[in-house]
Image (tube, rainbow, N blue to C red; front, side, top):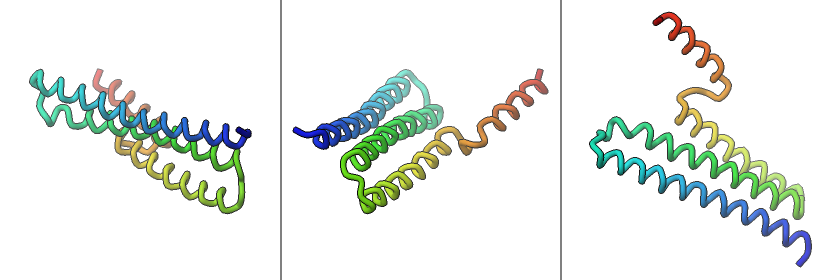
Length: 127
């Protein structure tokens, strides 16, 4: 077994971890959702937290998948074609991650500080 095979195996293992994170997060979020639903909470109350939990699981899983792609592509045999394909994959996954983050947090990643400041100002005005 040479170093290329070892690195490829590490990349695949990281991919498996990413898929596992998504599946585990989806299952645990669903369990929490149904247990709260059974305790009397309404669908409307739980829907947003359920979506946020699923979104967070997917976001974290995507990060692992990108890492696995980078390791397998760049570390094993970096050709212009493989790096180009990697760039497209990372671009798509980054776009998906940003859109999921906007969906989960309700704001663009670069506007978080502005939103926190606005929330503090609103809280001060209410006091």
